[in-house]
Length: 316
Image 1: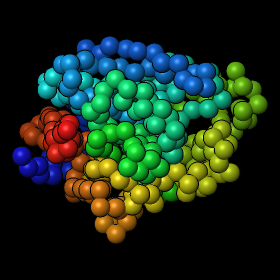
Image 2: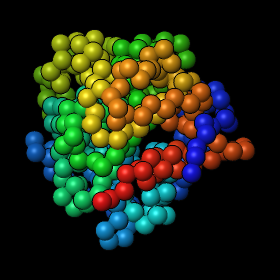
Image 3: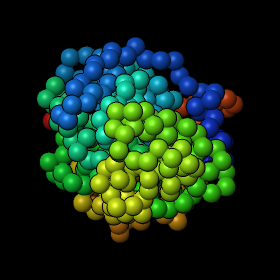
Image 4: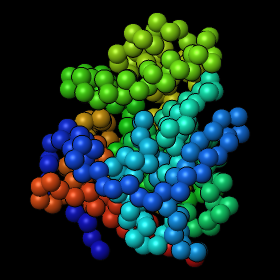
């Protein structure tokens, strides 16, 4: 089976907003597990159960996403139709589980991905992993760190802010600032202020409330909370683009050139990726949109593309 780039809704902003507003599939029949974390926290994982011995598809959501995000529902439905297993692990403070620790999640958090995948691999010998946006950044950083010992048989990263400096600059200006950044700040700031109730010296409450851009929030909250010197240090150290050459399992990197979160000029070329990395940059698709077909469109292109990639690397 071959796949062509989607052509419907070519505008980057439309491809980002439209699926979430109008095309969200029905909620899959999730089964929830709550896992205690090694550092005393708790995360939620939402599973769809498949046939005995079938592969497991793990999907790491994007910034402030969940198992109810449109792309998560679409992929989990596609996985269930095959009789495969699927799971959407939630990052700290997401999925309706409060985060009471003096940490959250960030683009370079390979350790969190490693712990989740290693535990899942104990149940499912054949495991595939996909990550969307910030979750894709975390997954790519993990794959680069672990090389040939990484848990997934194959992986995919979709609409990833591969260059965090370029992505943050894009989101802190114009349309991005007034729509996307404002939307993310509302939940990020609420969660940060809630953490201060348990850890009052974690950061200054007035700086959190004043944050209006990713540069400000990452400098005052994300960076100090996770051991980075500044927002720029965080962006530089956590960007996954610089590590693509170290990935040693089959990995698809899929970004639309009209993604409003990352300028096309920041996309890597083949000289910056190792032989196990397949770069695919369609002209259209926006940010985790990839809507195809007649109005109002369909969301099946992305799940089909990911499963087609995983099919190339079956269980031995």
